Length: 304
Length: 304
Image: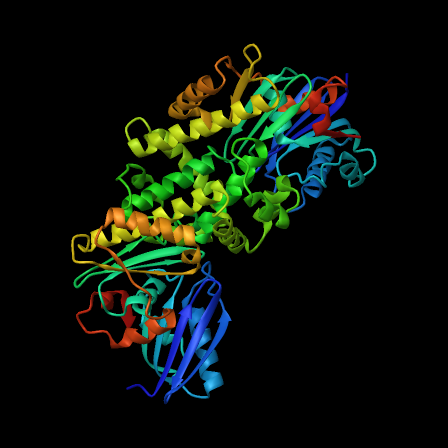
């Protein structure tokens, strides 16, 4: 067993840290990872901060993070940025790996993590497949950002006569009383990604009574299920006995999205079995160091 | 007749200026309008620049520009930012007005201007209707940005197994050899809007042989036609005898987009008649000051 362990879950909104020291567990939060800047220096700063408040280094530091480029996927390079003694061992992975481990542990299956963005990862006995997670411009189909963008577009189509009226207009007007000025203010907002994503919740809230919102939820659920089904197929689990699928993230708290997801997944992979996530990303990151040598997720974790 | 006239067409990519002085016409370009900053000071700077190189003020300054908020739609406020004598008269309007006047002059009809973004304006004898032009997040359906985003999404869907293979992947790989890193580099690019829009041209280029590209062009053409038809309906021109529709901008140079536009428009407004634009935005801006008093576009032009 490790004596002292630092676990870091680097997200876009906030970075969660967990320190485990002789059975004592403490958790705290730091600002999110800036994905438009190099990520490793930000992680090094978080480790330094944790070591300072602990007044000691760590036997093991395990990190799952957003925004890691391939060049940065290198635990050795991160280690070189640390002061001596801060970390004896270091494990570094994309947050799709930590989401997976948190939800399903070392078992096969597929995990869909849908918040502001979305990424799906499937793991079989021998291989892994990542589907989507390509960001708000090139991908993230079915994410909160995606739903919010569809909502804003639907509101403007209702406004200019191209589309049906929708109760989503109320929420958009609450923020921008003059709809025709909304896009100018939105485009100038430094936090526009999260502003757009915030309307995803509104879409779920309106879905029970508004056909436009219901349609967006339906499409989102189907996109997410298609991603899960594709990942299961690519890892050879489509025909296996009841492959496990776990759903994470705020998007799935919408009943209509969840219903559409379940229906579409059953259509594409009839045997798929929805399972409750066992834990969160931090729980998953704790497992990174202890994976069996031949586990396929090992190849997605850089260790030193 | 005016002795000296300054005409400014403020675009996102560049600002075009035309100086007319006793029959002599000269044109030049300045950097584009920064739509995330107040627009009037940028226009004042452009007027100051033109007055300096002309070594004289202007009898009339006419401006059509992108990015104008409602609060800024005020020729008096712009006049107040100028040194005395720079402009005796000032006309200020949204670039949809200048596009319209350039293409159809003071006649009724509808004009669709589709470049990086898209805006449609219809004008009848009594009223006007603007459709779309709500920017790359909330609108601009069928624009080059919209086509480029669809292309990037299709390429990533081909890459991760959710969608069919497409020859669009070649162009995206030319820019980002590692597709999985593309979104990180794109999101960090300061000029990401124009980068995404640049793929719109690629979609048109591939449409003759690639079904995925052809489908994007088809959808774009139908979105643009739906906007034109909606604008004609809102101005009461749907049932009139052969309402004129003019198309402007790079998107319409794609044969497949144009064909889909023509087919969908004929379906929605059977009598609509496609006409060649008479001139460009600068030509339209020249007409702003001379419109009849009761022309419906007058209400969209701020004059002082």
